Amino acid sequence: MIATVDFSADVCGDHAWKGKNVKISIKDSDNEVIASAVYDFTTKPMKFEDGVTTVKLAFTTNQYWRAVSRIKTSATSMVVQEGSSPNGKPSADVDSARGGANIADSDMERYAQLALSWQVSNDKSAISPLHDVPTTQLFSRKYGMEVDGKTQHYRDIYKQYLELHAKWPNAVLAWAADYDYYTRYGHEADYYVLLSGERFDSVSDARSWCSTNAFGPNDCMAVQME
Image (cartoon, helix red, strand yellow):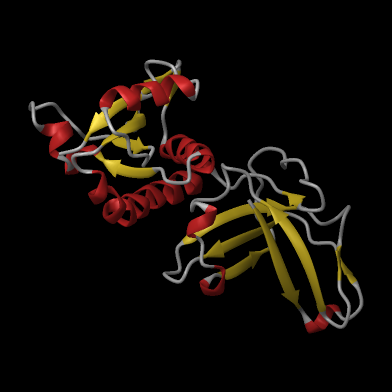
């Protein structure tokens, strides 16, 4: 994600600002953090003119917690904090957008967990029209489960959501326990599922979609919500 940010600081006048270890966080209208990274402006300072400047900031999928299409830029605010500790090396710049380092793992986990809850709640209305219509499930994930030898944390699950949602914009996130399809046989359903949101004429067509889009048999399956 690339954010174009207008900065205003009368004290900077026509000078360059060389802030180091600067955590920049973007919040939504509910004051929830939806993006955050630590930037270093010592080698590429912000150049102010009459106390204002515009800078492009790049956030990787480890650094933002809201699908870009769901962000209402008019309702966002920004917090700038100097003296923050970067978590690893900064990501590469993207064209003219500055890359930043991750924030602390504990904060990434907290924001990702909140983002998953927000997404599940906000996607419920989009899941209702999928009842009794074949669609496809792109993943099922649970905190602490092993996937390809990696233990899943909330930040891993949300990163996968962002990556798949970028490819399939109709994708919706659900908490499996909320739906009879996943609980009807008495199985535990305390996990997240991502549905493509695509609608098909038959289960067979849904399965074909998985194959056509190069999903493996363990990554994509046809489902029909009830």
